Length: 593
Ligand code: ARG
Image (cartoon, rainbow, N blue to C red):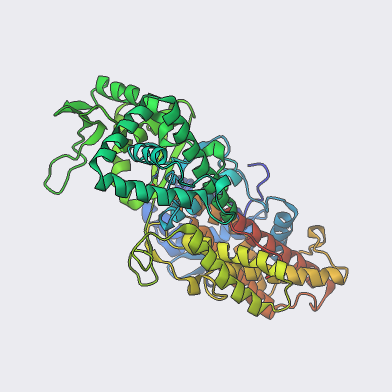
């Protein structure tokens, strides 16, 4: 991690570790337990934990550690005090604080290292279904998956994106047959009015085909034969299937562009890509004794997975009619991602309601020897998006809510908020900023909720300028940019080399520096549990800390030139950290709002 600027926290950790090695050598490797502190800059709880193990009095041990820390000339520490039963309250030197600000501000990566280097993560996310419109149910997987992909990539990891598109199954027989019998149906993008989407046209066809399938037994028969033709590779059937897939993927791509999601066509690895691997998957599982025949079907019975009646819930590898389903395809994804994509880690960003499926698939893959213990496989599960009334989100008529529609509604609300805040904006700029604020507010509302929780889709709250919202963070960022523009008009530019370590920082200034120092920690916390809401929480604290600083510490009108120079760099670092963090969430940070 050569480019990382070590955090002040880790500087104190090393100092506490050195002190421990001197005072109580048998505890030398213990965790220094350095945390933010209410009373000082940082605190270490090491003495409490170590005293318990060593059976000595914590206060005495803390006293000896404090003594050793005071003698340590290399530590960035100005004062150490023992508090309570044996906490070590640490005040950092002003020089160390300012050095930290200057070093991070001078680094294009803001001091963040690359702890993920050398690790390849395959991340499965979005996975919408062909010939259907993306709906609110696809929001979370797309947004959370994309943010995790960005963060892992930024931390130096190699990220392989995979969208497990639903592009196979009996519904295609129905759709292709219907299209054949209704040559006038308009669904190609080229035939549609500019503002209609091929996918919504396909979606309507899908409903029509489904209705006919249910009402007309002869049509249903023809549709079933069409599935067989598709599976057998009948050229005209496959050709129609391909156009349907291509039209859908183009429409997904447009939505991804609008959302600022990184998925590209190269990342689509739909269910159909595994077709010719499924028989091999089944054969290997059977040969390994992991799966066995039961009433003609090939199943995995794992005693770890039982239903409410205590009977094992089987994983269905091959149906009794010889067909394969969702379980088998996901077994194939694991085998492929290990053998061919050489993953070191597998993430599946999928609805929590699929947790049994993934637990079973992972267990079978481990039993088959495809998934070694050294490779982590995680179902990155998330809760449901609820309507404003707290019930599952549906349209008034009870249908699914289209994602495109939700985004439009958010942008409309955001436009009103931005226009009110900033009445002088030219129309084109208002459009652009409203789009960024509207999309950002939807993404942020999703990402800032603890992943596993359900949340209510409440547009008014999402676009609010106050509280833990995307717009609030974008506004906090834009306000700093505006300050820096005013500085530039006076010929003042933030210059990390000009930071003066002898300036005593004010209270709010000190808190801001300490918070900026925690950026790397916030990112590693986020990755530890694959929880973007940790990064959101950090950015929100940072924006609040900057506001407190801004209200109490004049920048352009600072008391001395040195103070002003320091505050300019501090402001620029705060803006860059907000922008960098928002970018890792996939959210734009406009310069004006
Ligand atoms: N297409 C599926 C759905 O809409 C999601 C696929 C998730 N990924 C996976 N490997 N199963 O529910």
